[in-house]
Amino acid sequence: MTAVRVGLLGLGTVGSQVAERLSREAFVTERAGVPVELARVLVRDLNKPRAYAPPRELLTTAPEEILDDPSIAVIVEVMGGMEPARSHIEHAIESGKAVVTANKEVMAHHGPTLLELAKARGVDVYFEAAVGGGIPLISTFKIDLLANEISRIEAVINGTTNFIIDRMARDGVGFDAALAEAQALGYAEADATYDVEGFDAVFKLCIMSSIAFRTRIHPAEVYREGIRDLDPVDFAYAAELGYAIKLLAQARADGDEVEVRVHPTCVPTSHLLAAVHGAYNAVLIEGDLVGPVLLYGQGAGGRPTASAVVGDIIDLVFSMRKGISNRIAVDFSRAPRRRPMDQVRTAAYLRLHVADRAGVLAEVTRVLGELGISISSIVQKALIVEHAAAELVILTHPARECDLLAARERLASLSSVYAVPAFLRALSEAR
Ligand SMILES: NC(=O)c1ccc[n+]([C@@H]2O[C@H](COP(=O)([O-])OP(=O)(O)OC[C@H]3O[C@@H](n4cnc5c(N)ncnc54)[C@H](OP(=O)(O)O)[C@@H]3O)[C@@H](O)[C@H]2O)c1
Image (cartoon, rainbow, N blue to C red; front, side, top):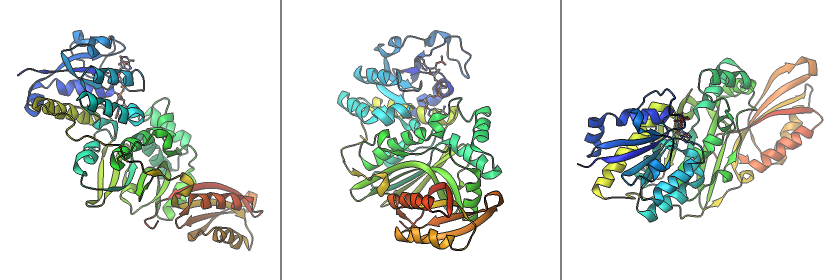
């Protein structure tokens, strides 16, 4: 049996765990049907200590030694970032090599183009690890739910923000302190912008929704808000109303329209995603035949992510041995309209600082009523003595985003309203 030779681009958190699992030759051969040989490994620094170090002579800092080696049939890209990773993947496909990648940034921006190129070249690109680390999501969409029209994806898909949010919710810690703690514990990078501003969740949502809705959804099309402006007090008030606040990635297909958005959302505590804590991720998918499906697990980390990467390698090698490529090709040919954010229907949570006098409540409810927004609950909270102000928390029934934003503006302009410090969307089953 001729071994399939693999070139690994990257030997960091994920790459070293991939190399370690591939070093278990009998285990991999049993599953792939042929030996899988780690041929070369691309790194930046040849002398860096590694969690798992393959033989030193396999390491190189020259990508062409891997990409232009005709004996290497599979490229595994786990180096991360946009460039040179995207170019290396493209080069590999052009050279007739199959690719396995964990790169959400590349796949969210260029996935459909790379997959079409791969189809034309008769090779495969597998990317299970690009979304949700070890949680089997891509194969779920590509294969297991193929018989369904997917109508809804709701996901807690970024462990860093979920860790920060947990700290804010459970212990009343402010955002900056919770972020610093996440960084000290290794849950957040020194530059956590991609996570806390919601970009990482956007990339993952793009990949999932493009496959689910069979259309190209680009990151620039996704409405995005991060968690930086969240205030611990809203976690406490939301909890009293029966809600948890999560950074929720949502995609919906409704007739010939799709909506895709990532923002902090009040999620009913009875909702399955409200119970996803810390670095765990979960994705709820609704199909017309299957109904709701929940996938839950570790969305990051070297070993869970290597589980997805090595699974892809084995599946790919098995197919190659049988002479099969593009077993289930993803299709992006549909062109549903994108629903603009201001036309999205959502419930909302508003916190207001109002004058502590009679008649204020009537003024507030009149503004909401004039915009056709009905109130689900309204609670008067603590008196802020130094400002002679009361705090009002309002939960609305679903309304159009544009009407909710108009309400926020009109409420803020009332003489009896001093400020509207919080406006959050809320999940509601009635839409
Ligand atoms: N970590 C996770 O939990 C996780 C989860 C899901 C998906 N992913 C994805 O998996 C990929 C890898 O993540 P990671 O956490 O393993 O990253 P990492 O720890 O930073 O490792 C990156 C590796 O790539 C090498 N590398 C980067 N740029 C290079 C360049 N220009 N030339 C040569 N080598 C280069 C680095 O070499 P040196 O070691 O020599 O610096 C390092 O070994 C990313 O796309 C990430 O989004 C990661």
